[in-house]
Length: 380
Ligand code: OGA
Ligand code: NI
Image (cartoon, rainbow, N blue to C red; front, side, top):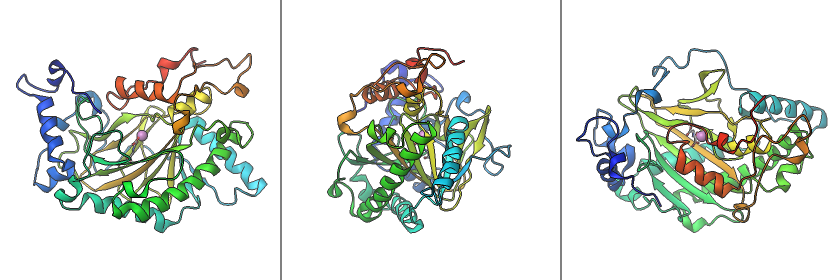
């Protein structure tokens, strides 16, 4: 459940007569999302979505993209069961996780038609008549499936240009009845393949940390999946708003499927770098909690999604976090990675504590990472 901000907080962007909370409530009550605004012929971005200048810095124009040749590393998992090839994959993964915190994976084993099926189902859901999709619109956290626009609509300073679908898969069998018919086949099929990929990556990342391949699996830090899909409608004034504000993820690992419309950018060497869609690839990024348990070896990196005239962009993120029974289990820097020269950089925390802090205090709202609050030693 979301709480409304106090009246003082509701006057944010511009002018004393602007009642942000009221506009947010009215928008929420349409149950039609940002797509509904576009469908109604809205040619200007409403004030609710206009971001302050500090969020809009370095927005590249709709056509130019970022002014750099830097590219997120591509990791080819082909043959990673062969011991010699596996060593190369592990080395590539280590380098990518240490430097970029992001990598595009090819030959990951998820069939292209399964990926296309889930992207198409998400698109179809949002493109249904408003009355039909509105039935699923909800801000109730207890629901295993729900449709909403911005999760932080009543907390953020400015809303973002997207609509959202959430599928919660706690440890164990997902509940097929909880999701609309349209998704049963494609999402559950995708989930099955993602589970396999997660297991392989869990082993490869354990090895990349210099640990036994079963290490990350044994500590049960990625037993739950939250699949969150975003639909980013075309935007008439992309220079005024964002699809997703800069943030890092409160996960161990995130696996992201994106359609051919770009818009995602990652922060690397003090620049925003476009993540160009690679056909058939799955994008993976290290989350804050992986940075914490790896004691800063792997990096959780800031990223954002631009609003654009082209689109709609569709993405399907799979957030890997501890299972329901591990929500209160303390996780800290992995002991095997510590010695006299490598003291723990963070205190222990639970997923519940970390995520609660993340939601309430900042990341995704103002783009500031919450990881430093858990730091006990300064980086060298
Ligand atoms: C996220 C995210 C990117 C996208 O949901 O954390 O970064 O392309 N999504 O939707
Ligand atoms: Ni993210």
